[in-house]
Length: 421
Image (cartoon, rainbow, N blue to C red; front, side, top):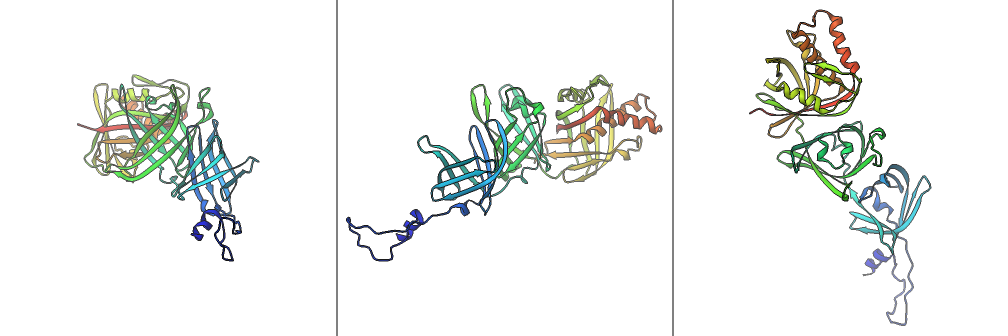
């Protein structure tokens, strides 16, 4: 019992035996209990209008990342907890003192006003998910009137995030089809939208809590994001689960028909570029132009062998088939167009390819340079077919590729295909 009292209240036992009578008291020495060491690690807090991740070190210093009152912030400071009092001081001069409560070592609360019970509860994060989220994730949403709505998120190691989707699938549509910065601390991800993409009255951030489950289903890893967003009905809680597509490819014998296009981070020359019966303007581009074009030509991709790709399309009533060797490294697929026997002036294209677990879908993802080469290769094919380009004229061929590179400043393209019936 004495040990329990020491642990709970900081009392020491009496040196002399005490007579436990109502009119007698035993003198006790008060001991401060410093909880600071127990807080070493990463802790996160998120509610409707506040999100914060704290990385607390053994010396009591703390690194803080969060969003509050519509602003993203990163700060450093110190935390000290003695008994039930917490002192939280940041290097910018802000300091708070509140009551501290800890629950089973898995969470703690800071209470800033006992009467109003203003509290923030932080949960302990055993694992930082920064490395786990890197890759491509696919989400399907069932919405009234929307068939097979889809979102694709690609988290890159350089802190950039591309989210390609039909905006109707997400209340936080401002983050769709743009390139954003992101930072993961513990189980929180902070997404920071470029200011030029923020509509008037909107906030340039989203904070989400992540739940990562390895091999959650037979289809693979699941990443669930929960966030609070503003809607017409006030702040609502939005939860979306994303499936990590396979990180290796099973190609031989698979054939896929074109399904949809999603684009992000599009910018370029404000000029119409005629192409077959379509025109492309990369200053005003959205996915609908490419989507319409690829649907009109019945674009199809197949893999007759593990190291060969064949894609075909209808061009003015004629079925055009292009074949090329491929080199595959995980999800990286290099299409060796330069080894095309008929048109060796084509340039090789690096594509990131992803399949779902049963190979019913394939996503072909191209960053800017890959898209430029893909688009220019197709332009060369069309021009050669119409007798408009002599492939033996190196300057004329180079001009085709240079014009595309000049027109396209940036683009991220995701082509979604479905197994052919």
